[in-house]
Amino acid sequence: MNSIPGHGQDHRTLDKLINGVNNTSDDKNMWLIPFNSGEDHILKIDLGRMTMIGAIKFYNYNKSSEDSLRGVKQVVVKVDGKQVTPNKGVTLRKAPGFMLPRDDLMCNDIGQLVYVPFADGWKSNMILPLQKQAVNSASQVGLQQEYEPVSMPIGFNFRVNLYSTHGDNYYIGLNGLELYDQLGNIMTINS
Image (cartoon, rainbow, N blue to C red):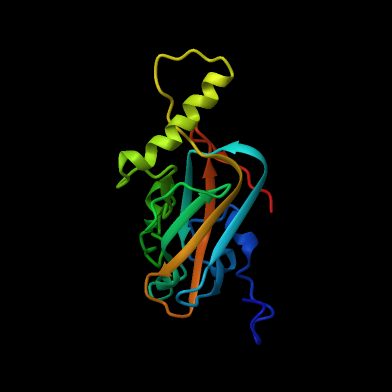
């Protein structure tokens, strides 16, 4: 936003995606960029080392009921260039545009957990190459297992393509982004 004339002091910057303040309607803790239909809107996350990821939690843009239309509708996730979501992407639900007046975090958790690889709606021939890669890497280190492990993407760089909004023609944004390891623990992302 700050690259647009007249928006030099906008506080909705990229660092807000990983500041940990996600369940909010305060736009001082949100990220927003101009939306141009048909163009690429890409987030790249470099973890600095090989890391196994089990899920990504998206917190959609939640400033107000009207502004929640700026939230991301379709995302495609790639790990080190390999796509781990279907070609059409994963649909994210629209944020409510408000927070409930309760202290209970579960009542106000607007995040949406997307497991990767996202298997819902995939055909088995799309998932098998990922599973075979995990089995081969497990056998290379001499592990003897009686079951086939669940394949999790492993990589340095995560790329998230934001393809559409829930209706806003000018802006696209998120409240936050969290990565989870295979045990369900939130991972730290350094800016």
